[in-house]
Structure formats: C-alpha cells, structure tokens
Length: 623
Image 1 (tube, rainbow, N blue to C red):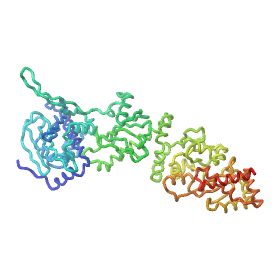
Image 2 (cartoon, one colour; image 1 turned 120 degrees about the vertical axis):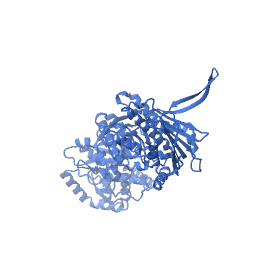
Image 3 (cartoon, rainbow, N blue to C red; image 1 turned 90 degrees about the vertical axis):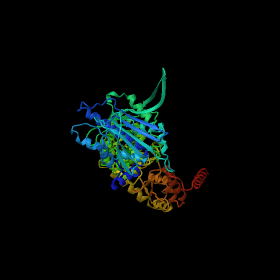
Image 4 (tube, rainbow, N blue to C red; image 1 turned 135 degrees about the horizontal axis):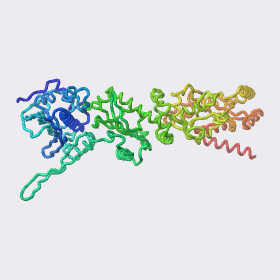
C-alpha cells in the first residue's frame, strides 16, 4: 500500500497538536494510557452482550527499549480493524470513542475517557515515527498503521492476540529538549504515578528480564510490576475509609506533619458530575501569604491527572483548600489552556465554592472551636475576599467573618454582634490597632464602653479596607471610634460641650494656630474621660489606614488629623490659666499634640526636641 498523505487541513492540525496545544510534553504518556484504558472499557462493555467476546485479565503494558530508542504501550482491549485505523488515526480529530459511546444505549454507564480523538497525536511531541499494530476482537487479521507525521500507511501484519501495541520511536535530543529522558524506566514510572495512577486497569512495567536455565533447558523470565494504584481514595465509599486513611493520604500528599483540621469528602451528580476530597489544613503554611505559595488543589478526569494548582476550580478566597477534584465530565484530550475556558470549569468552580462555604458555615455553628482555629489561620484571606474586586464577593463571605471584641476578648461574627446590639445602638463600632492590647489602651475607647456598646477589634492590615468596602451589615453602618463624631452624647451633654467650647474659644483658636501645620482642626470633645487629649481623623481616611499605606510605601497618603481635648481634665484647666495670664503656651500645646501622636501609635517628627521640652518643663516644675 502506498503512503497516504494527510490532508492539508489535517497536516496543519497535526502540527498544532504536536507543537502547540499541548505545552507539556510529559502528557503524551497520559494520553496513550487513557486510549488504552478506553479500549479495555470497550471490550468489557461488548463482552456483556456478546458471549463470543471475553474480557479476562485486562491490562496495559509499558516497555522501554533504551538501545532501540523506543517506548511501547500495549493493551488487550477491543483492538481496531483496517477501516478503524484509517478512520480513527488517518483522519485527525475523529474519535472512535465518541462514536462508540454514541452507539450505546442512552442508559449505558460506559465511562469512556477519550472523546475528542486528538490525544493520540501528542505522541509526535516526543516521537518522529509512530507504529500502531492492532487486531480487533473476533478477527484473525491484524494491521499496522505507521506514520512519520507527514503521511501514513496501513499494511497487513501478524498479532497473536487481540488488542493494540503502540510503538514510539523517540526523537533525537535538541538544545531545547532532552527526549532521551523518556527512555529512563524510572522517569516513565514517575509519569505513570503522576498522571495515570488511578486508571482502573493495572499498568505493568518490566522490572527485569533474565534467562533461567534448569536441566539443560533455557527459559526467558520477565519480572513485572504494577505501577499504578488503580483505585483512588476519593472514589471509595466513605464507609470503607477510616479517619486515619484520610489523614495519611493528606500528610503524604502534602508533606504536612499535622493532621488536617477538616476533611470534606463528597460526590456530586448532575450536569457536571464529580468526586472531591478536600482538606482544610490545621496550620497555615509558612509562605501562605507570599507569591511563592502554590494552590494545593489537583484536577483529575476519571482518575486521570489533568493538572496541579487548579486555580480554575476554586475561588482565590478559598485558596487554603487542599485536595482533589475528579470530574466525570471534563474533556481529557484537550490542552489545559483550552480547559480553562471550558464552561464546565465555571460550573465546577461554583459547586466546589458552595460546598466549601457550607462546610465553613456548619463549622462555625457546630464546631466553633475548630472554626476559630481555622479563622486564626485563614481569616485574613476571607476578609481580603470581601474587599477584593470592590466587594463583588462580600455577600458570599460576610457571614464567615469574625473579629475579637471588647466583650470577653472572644471571636464574634457580625451576625452575633448585630443580634446583641443595644436597642439604641445605630452603628457597628470598631477600633483599629496593631494588637488587642494596644487597642485596649486607646483613650477613645472609654466613652463607647461606658455606654455599654461592644467594640470590634481590627488588628489585620486588611480590616480597614474591609470596612470601607463592606460599609454596612444588615443595614448597620461600620463606625470607627477613631474617626469623626460618634454622636454618643445626650442633648444635655451636647449643650454643655457647646457652652464649654464657646467659653474656651480664644484658647482653642490659639492652639489651632500653633498646630496649624500638624492638624486640620482642634476642638473640645466629650469622648475622653481619663486622658487630656487624643487624635482622631475626619470621615475620609483613618489614622490606622495612614499607617498601613505607609507600610506599603505610599507616604503621600495621610489622614486629616483632629486634636480633641478633654475640657474636664486638669491639664486643660492649667493650660487655660497660663493663657489667661498671658504666658506662651506653644511648648505645652505642642507637647499635648505629641502625646496624642504617641498614643495613636504614630512616630514623632523630632523625638529629640520632644525629650528636651519634657526636660525643660520638669526642671521648671522642680524649681
């Protein structure tokens, strides 16, 4: 038979398949093993209705011949006749698997992996010549299909049993690619473990071969080993799995010395069917909040590995999840780049996200201690998820958010906070700081706590951003006790403060003039009890936000600072007397501001000058 040329369109597609669609040459073995598994499935399905077809001892065999530079993948599946070799391999992207499945009864549960007919041609990524020797079940004729990617020919041949043998003649090395690595048995074994470990049929490899002699007779002995596990843990029934099985799988797979905090094993059937085994780590990886962190979710299709770090099937705000998702409906024989655009991936992602969210909600309600451990590790990620994208996901995540608060220093959810609000309380109060201990020392906290209001402690750098985007919860606005007017005074208290402000107007105006380059305003305040003064900001940017932005090297962004003075403090009364006596109060006003600056956790512009002023005033007092 003369060599047939591929059609121009097919040749172009073949070049694309071998050089463009698949970006990782390693997956050629995955594709060929999947095709072999496919052939075994077909033979088994036909044996159920045709007594003349047996399906005994199904297996896939791989052999590596370093000397002759070949890799052989064989199976005892359904095989192909001459027409099928012509149709399935001579016509690019025609899938025998797809046609076979479409001919079955609609109720059939045949699990055919390859339906796009393109995976076979990935062999040409590593081979410059491919041979396919096949004999179909119930046929005594065998045929060999041979191609060097330019054309192909099909010739009659001999084969002792049913099935298919694919022989790859590996390319010579180039500067860019070392193809001879595929002639290393250990390399092939590791690729099988990585990509095809859970193919349902045994994949055998030759371990050693030797001649055995006894009584003058010589016999060739081959020692084989099965290199795949065949049944993944996530495909097993939950009743057949012990807790330690889950734990061992997790710790071995992710090199974690700690057991997972939570295991999520479930199966979904529907438009997009899949099995999933997910884990919430009990400890945050040391590099979790760095660019070096790799997502720990793996994607499989019918037990065949597709890719690591499958960010397409889980939202970034759930990136702490580790585990496996194995879908029955994903198209295997297409590249990962195309896979990312598949609408099925979006459906899968939506379902996985929903399950994770439901699990976390149940943990918060029924396993509070575990949920708080989780939140200690990954709560910042959820808060960032609320803030990211201008709050597009805030409704999804908001009820998973918790903060420590002034009420017993324990975590409280926003729902719990609002449910426990006093009848006269209009806002959700919060205070920002580096730690709970420092927040508790804030002068601004006194008045709010005296009123009996609970205050949330914002200690993460993302918290201020979170509040600015989320803005409200159940129609209750977030209100910083470090910003603006809290409107906590009674009518009488407001009248008293207004009177004191009017009486002290001259002094306040003088302090404003002294501090005009440092603060936007100076005024008397009723929010203070013990302390003489404090700094707050207007309703735009908070002082804490300024500190966060400074850490991000955005020095130009500053809060409009307001110095609030306690009119009932002895220091203010002393300052008033000095002013009434015509004494210069510049140093005193500056020190008052700088004390408030320190209490706000901000740096002094000139610490040395501050120390000298303190020394001078101390000496004056002693004298």
